[in-house]
Amino acid sequence: MVHYKKVKKAMIDKDLTTVKLSEITGFSRVHISNVINGHFEAPRARKAIADALGMDFNELWDGQPNRH
Image (tube, rainbow, N blue to C red; front, side):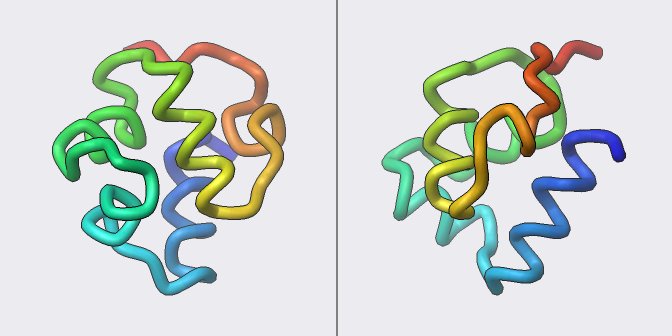
């Protein structure tokens, strides 16, 4: 499964929006959205998102950088 689909599924399962992830992680909503959608690589934000979703970083992001 493509990582952004995993993230979005996990967000739905946890009833979290990008706004709520932003509040939890301390990153802006736009930054969270850009990271989830693969517009740029941001390891610290990815780690914070994985932690907020209660998921393993490598499981969520397939251990790979996200590049388009």
